[in-house]
Length: 133
Image (cartoon, rainbow, N blue to C red; front, side, top):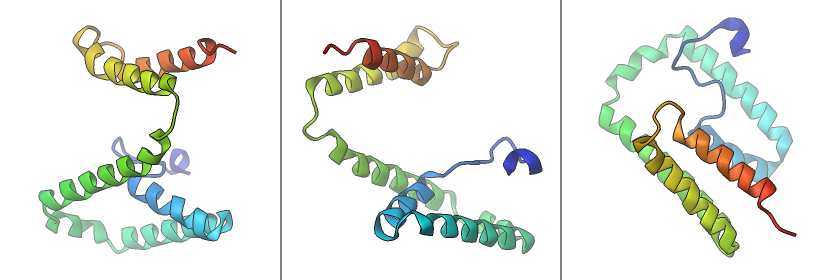
């Protein structure tokens, strides 16, 4: 839909962190059919808010509140991912460490290609071709 009606450079046309956290619990508790209804309802509410120019009220929300909100989302997403790391193989921990090393150390050497992209490519190739049976 976004590609047809346009948008702006800072526009998010996918699930944001806040919505993803809510959607996971919605699907787990009520099933996939409620996700479609919730998505349509969310879109309708956003259209009504846009027509009523509610976005003008955003200037009254302090920057510290927005920073706190985003940081709380980051902490919640981090905490939600922790159970996936418990009881895994040593190879998974080594790949995670390797990816973090690439992400944080590679920009000191190469700045042309984003280091997260390189980490994804390297770890994908390592997972696909480096697995021994």
